[in-house]
Image 1 (spheres, rainbow, N blue to C red):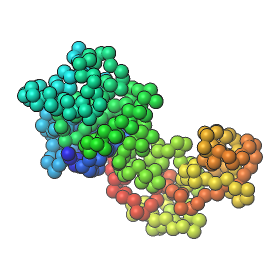
Image 2 (image 1 turned 90 degrees about the horizontal axis):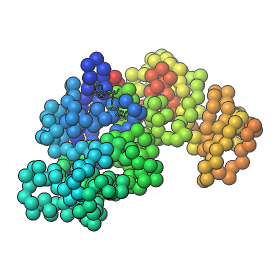
Image 3 (image 1 turned 30 degrees about the vertical axis):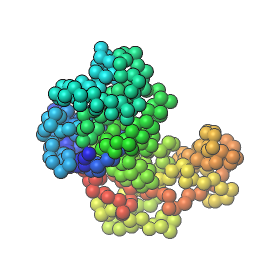
Image 4 (image 1 turned 60 degrees about the vertical axis):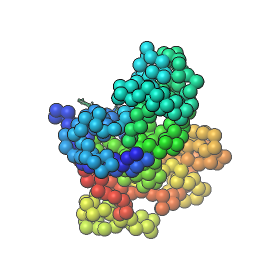
Length: 365
Ligand code: ATP
């Protein structure tokens, strides 16, 4: 299997730039998510890795070998299209064996390989059935099988579960992740669904407007968002943003918040910009006392927790609190935040002030 290094890739379609200088590394065996809203450049990035589009500039390395300008057939990467793209007139066995037969593999070897892959996917019992009559789940397994039989170095998947209803989607995503854990195959997976990315991914690249906003583990991205866009896109409800009087003073290397010193990255020093205070709903505490107060304007019961929406002097804020906590619409309560859970952003750039972050990726675009 394979490590994939993406170095400063860029893709232009005429005068339109779909992907601006983007860099990240996909380690061998990782389940790697490309996440972002519609049109941000995820599919284009995936297609460049598979060789279905060639980058305008930049480099792609597969196991140390530069493949940036090679055709797909010389990359040994399998692209799993929307799972239903099968040959409808063929049975399951023929669908699975087709890629091997077209490579000229001997019949006996084809049979052995198809049997092995059918075993991995648990579809031994349907090999003779035409794909037209299969359930959605089985079709999905066959489509995956067709990619797996080739023993590629890596799998590219573009929203493979996109067409499924919620319950089935959850079951298939668990199955896909379990399959990945058994095979340990490097997998790059495109999705616009942040929950899917958080649940399935070892690492996530968050893209927006053709730019990589952040790259890290689900926990890093959730706990330490590099930008306001990431903080807003990840998490439901998303992070609360409150305007804040503080400014990064000319030349300051840090700012103070509730006795905490937050480092200011080098390129933001001297920015002298207005700051935004970011706090996740689960880190907002409702108290009886406290100087900072808000009026409860809505409550949403979710079983084990509830979401309380409050109006404060700085705007609306959402708190996730235990379902048993009493909060009545119309009452005014105190609000508490643990300073360690707060992220400060510079409003103009949307960048988080956190000195330990790798700000290299934020300088692109
Ligand atoms: P979606 O989830 O909607 O597919 P995405 O993040 O995968 O979004 P891309 O498909 O990579 O986005 O497209 C990024 C931008 O590039 C879009 O604005 C799209 O219209 C444009 N684009 C993609 N392919 C081409 C092409 N062949 N020619 C011109 N523009 C293109």
